[in-house]
Image 1 (cartoon, rainbow, N blue to C red):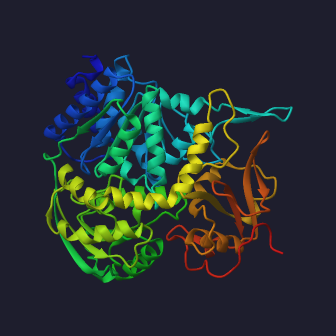
Image 2 (tube, rainbow, N blue to C red):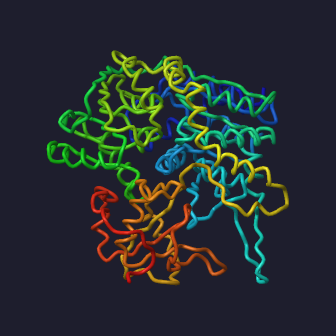
Image 3 (cartoon, rainbow, N blue to C red):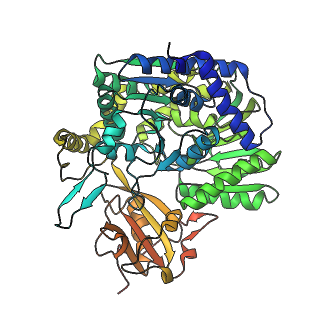
Length: 570
């Protein structure tokens, strides 16, 4: 057995990560020896597979709160220390942008020998997946790198464009890649999981080792990846979490969640499905729970404010015995290491509800949760929401996280006929993506066509005062912390909430600029046409506080009226 795969070496690696993290966080807790042994055993299996095969896929199953981060990182770190690395570098792919900063901080806390960096896929910070030995990124960014769609491009003095079109995929094929919380890589037509299965299969066949990690990955997803791989090596590794499973008392109600349902005197997490409801609940709780700390977190915050809120929440949960309430959308569903004693949540697809239950009782071993009806199925596909609602009563009583329980519930909802019926709605986008991918060839230009990983894309917007921006102004790196990411449907349907928010925000702007890259760097160019998905805009407002503040984020209610526009006021 390779030295880096020996159980005692992996156990020491995990123990070192855990102790460093406990020390940095200033936490007072002992290392759970039984859990440590379970983690080392699972890491040993992954490490063995890595050394035995030139490439392959490992499905890592672990209930929420089981410490799977240490499991999938230990093989890479131990192999580097043994001078026989299992891969040239590591990629950790997180399903949401809000998780990247938290994971980078966690890895930097736990690892002292290797550099860790992040790549959000922005046009304003084009690092193209080669930032550090360990790069934390998103599925979208990882996919566009694979497809030579997001690469370093060079415009020569003769006006000819060239670039490092094969560099990202070359790095990926020689790397150790982990898709963390992989069940969250989905959309309303299942375009992204289908495309991701193609990427996983191609990289595994090229020699890359791919770990697909999740507490609630539907069997359907595994089947799709297995079908793409054929006879190629696929293994399943499970982390035995019975040594640390909390007990959660769950109540399922048939009414909708209201602010008065929340106990102000606990460490409570309120999870709702839409930004507008999160703001409404937050405002009410802030008044009613005046003696408690109440925080709001959703997707429409600037990156700077989002990160600072998570840091403050972690601090409050550690320092206060009770009276801390977090109101959030899906951004706190996974990834961030938080521990509450009470959960108040709206019904969502079953895998999301299981993840939400995983925020409770992680350290104290006990907690309670109340599940309410949602006011609408949005932002989830209606079929998944309704099928999940049908089986929600099965969670009632004392719930203990386990692989078997999670798998049975998830597979009841994500039946193949249900997923296939939703996927057919996205077949046009899938065929377009397949045509693009089949046109890729080594040492050649990528196809001159748009490629989309989801039926929606992001537009990054920096809301800035008018006196610091202007046409031709160079983009300032510190402005990155002011970016708000809006999800925009590719259909460009004016009646969808994404385009509606965007166009109404632009209608209130004095000037709108697009960030464009050129030989002289990144500069602001006055926008003259409808913004394209994937672009970065700077919105100049005379009174930015009317549409955004650091307490509530992008304010939904003021964004009413107005007509779509770009550029300056007429």
